Amino acid sequence: MIARGSSDEDLARKHITRLQGLIARWNEDADIYRRAARGAAPTAVWMLEEADRTRLAVRDETALCDTLIDNLPPGHEMWGELPRVAMALDALSESIAVSAEAMGPRIEHGREIAGLRYLVGKLRKNAARQTVPR
Image 1 (cartoon, rainbow, N blue to C red):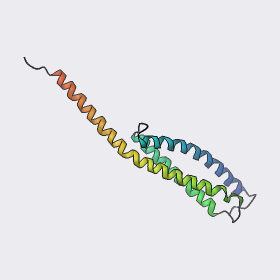
Image 2: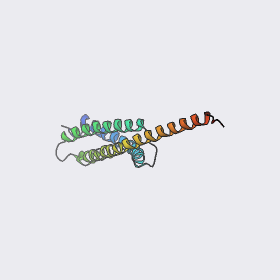
Image 3: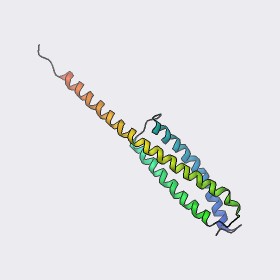
Image 4: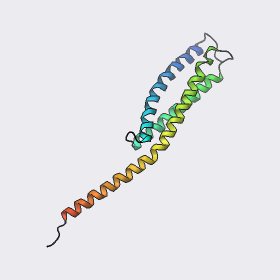
């Protein structure tokens, strides 16, 4: 239980402030993932891996936030802020998951195109080297 005026309450407030900063940063990252998923920006395997790491970090913070909510006494003044933070984290996690799912096929398609370009380039080089007898 978080008692008013206790060090637990101070810790919870610090946690909320920290989470608000993290949410702002993760929203910037999520914007990058969304642009890549829509094809408005290039995407790569490392970006998909980073999106997965970010989503896991968001989920860990959501679990911690849920624990804080479970320990709040009824009517506590933090009842307004903690659920808002938890909902923002849930929405962020879902957004990142959707973007990561959409990035997968784009990355695979990019590999296929890069592979085809490589093969066509090799064929052209080989064709240019061969002389046609006259």
